[in-house]
Length: 258
Image (tube, rainbow, N blue to C red; front, side):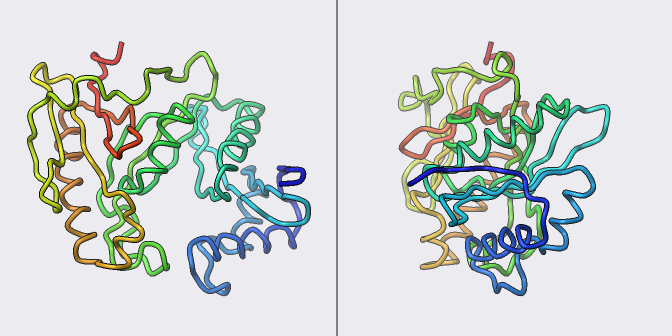
């Protein structure tokens, strides 16, 4: 790494470069990126922001955000990708931009089976998983999600430091002593729920992307098993508040989080 610079994009060549970068990350043809360069241009022109991170001349990360309804003072991050270790800087650039424009929260979605992204969103950034959406996009044909159902976990990120959640972030205390309620496709416990009914813990695969590529049917079984736990938990008033290093979500009732 030489000198990382992150800036908003305002030119056609910059939008095209970001579109190509997203194509490479999501393994789609350059002619069919997740977001077309023309779309990126329009979103920026409408008041959103396309951020591009460069290491010297090389594009190493990008993000796209727009504003939500005026009364919500919220922004919505449509897409973010970065080389390993750079995601935090890219999200912080989005955060600074959003605060400068009057926003107080930011939301986005991610695949809840990707544990490393869950840990980044919930622990590193201090967001909270506030909504579980079944098959959000419908069938997807990119090289990362192909063959799976597109369930997503929506994250709400408080942008002001005083409002963001603070540790202990993992939420693993009491997990191993809690009774198991579900069994995972690998035969080990999938979910545990404490006797006080204040926390639920749910496990995800070590690497769902590799698993999905090697055995799509098994990946889909994991999807539906985790979905069953999450949809019931969210219906009961739980939110996702933590992710451990060994792949367990912590789901917490709001009254128990205080």
